[in-house]
Image 1: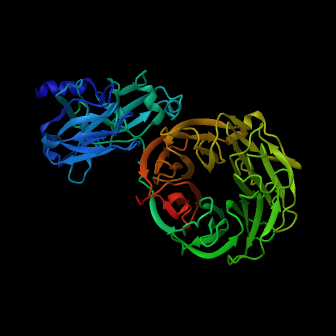
Image 2 (image 1 turned 30 degrees about the vertical axis):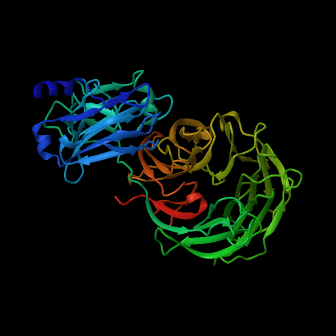
Image 3 (image 1 turned 180 degrees about the vertical axis):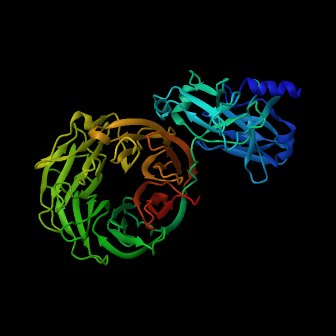
Length: 589
């Protein structure tokens, strides 16, 4: 019996998938087969049931469990004996996956399922095999194919020992659901068949386990798995009064964070809170609060002419308001109002996005705003003197579409920011040339890609400038996942590095080193799913989905700032539908 089981281990590696045309399943008894050394070392066994696509509950050992439709495991049962894993009495799932692992006393995985025969009405059998050791390695031989995205259909994986010799008979799988195959005599396995290709669009950690060489034991993954970000500080914002509109928005100027929220005392009015880092820690303190007539989107920058913080608010009444703060973060002047004139008549539409910075020259400020319900373009205002902005200048056209989001960032490395504008069906990059912003060349327009932008060095080994991440909250529908897209902006051209599912309501993204390996990772904020999706990067423009973490409440916005002076940015995020601000940083190693 045991010899037959071990032969089965060498033959195939696959999670059990239970499919049915309806929403029910006959009882299934979970049984485990393993070598004596695994049974001796195992302190517990973990049964995980993943949610299906149609129905969302199951009955395990007589107890009913509701399964949320998320990308994280829906039900995890830990028992001390493999014989207590239980019976799935009723599986109300159109399609489900079931996984079993053995863990030691510290909950470190020792072994996992690697063979299950076709399900019967009475039994599902799991044969457990050891993980590879930390000293073993594996490589992805074709990094282009490894890139997450619709084009990722195959990749070659080489499993080898620390001395470089290949390991045959190793089972390679993606994450905790998908098994892909067994390495050949040269230690290689080619992943990519009509069955497995769709799985490569949402890469998680790659695991290698179950080798014939019994001296090789343990686990390896493609990169250090980023832990869930550590929340080091948070503050509750006052509740909005009846009639108040909008949620909180945040902006950064230097080392200062500005947050706009509804004024809890007066409907329609808004308050701006000013925060600075708290004695070099990953925390902030509120040092000032100002009141403005209307709520709206916000942007902030230092004016190079006098060094003062200049805050612009694109109000929901079609008026831009400007505030100024000195070095002590005290509000200096009365709010200045700018009407966009004939381009955006006051009261006709609210601003969707706003940005401020030194684009036309290094000794002035430019302000950009969008109201896509009225103007299919980006409106620009020039500042003739500190604190003052002139009338609206000729707009930046966006092919008959308004801008969903605007951001200023130096993508070319010339110390002058470009204007990044995203329309519903394209992303545009405008650069200053001579006396004005030039219409972007075709290679500076990325068609069929949109979203709220974030910036960082996604591909530093190929180009010196920063790149783009676009979080597209409109790509999904209902319970479908939205996407984020990685964009290489080096060399003057925009090149998509692939789009991957993020979660429901991909509202924003943050770029930073989340696993301490010195390479940029991406944190996607999923507003409707109440999750953070972490994508680990390799500094070559390749990303794998490495973790999914729960958020305390719908995260909707993030800005990057180095609060503790370690040259690694933290994320200041808006949570709970604008009711909280929080600081997220990489978890301690």
